[in-house]
Amino acid sequence: MIKQSIVLFTLAIVVAIVVPNYWTQAWTWNHLPELAQVKQLKQIQQQGLALKGWQTLNQRSIKIGGHSWSAQAMRSTFPTEAIMPEAEAALATPQTTTLLLLRPQTWIRDLPQVDWMDINGLQQWKTDSARSIEFRVTGSNGQSIPVKARFLRGWTKERTYAVMQWYAWSTGGSPSPTNWFWANQITQWKTEQPLAWIAVSVMQPIAPLGNIETVRLPLETLAQQIQTALTETALQPSP
Image 1 (cartoon, rainbow, N blue to C red):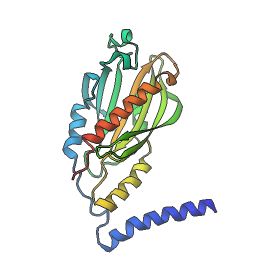
Image 2 (cartoon, rainbow, N blue to C red; image 1 turned 45 degrees about the horizontal axis):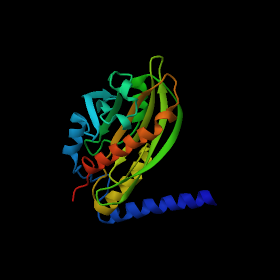
Image 3 (cartoon, helix red, strand yellow; image 1 turned 180 degrees about the horizontal axis):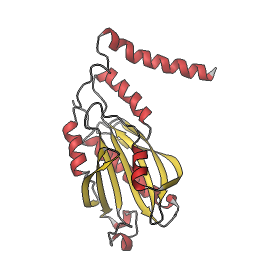
Image 4 (tube, rainbow, N blue to C red; image 1 turned 180 degrees about the vertical axis):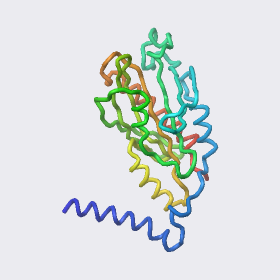
């Protein structure tokens, strides 16, 4: 009975989205609007993201799984809030710097797909300890924006990382492409504008096979800062 109710509810959503578009001859899949934020999204891809309290040590565009990503190595300029202890962070080695990977949507048919698998293939690491993290940020108009991210450990023989990943959009975030799909359909139904997204992967080196919980809180704080910065800049919907 519960399963039937879920199926009926899902079908009701689909009908609510599709039928109005059908009668107005404005099918989302046939008449795709342009991304209003394409200039800002490409700028993120080429230049990375400026974050208050973080110094960018190196930034460049790289290819992962056939897509262009911004790869940004950075460290905190506030030692008391740094993820790594000040003495270690001051060395600015690959073992102590935080790596931020960003893949913005740069054209309308570019959809979130297997980005986390692409990163796994690039890193050639094993993953474990995966779980979900939920947090909220405040949007520019004061609304509360819910975000869910995947939090896991990635490790090789040489290094171990605490990793946080999600797709960011202006009204939320999730590691699942399906969640973005439904949010995008609802947004297009209401505004006739697509919901731009950016894939985010934050990698923090930790002790070999260390416990990722030791950096969860500061990494979550950084994730909130990233979501807020993206929401206020590249993901800002057009007026």
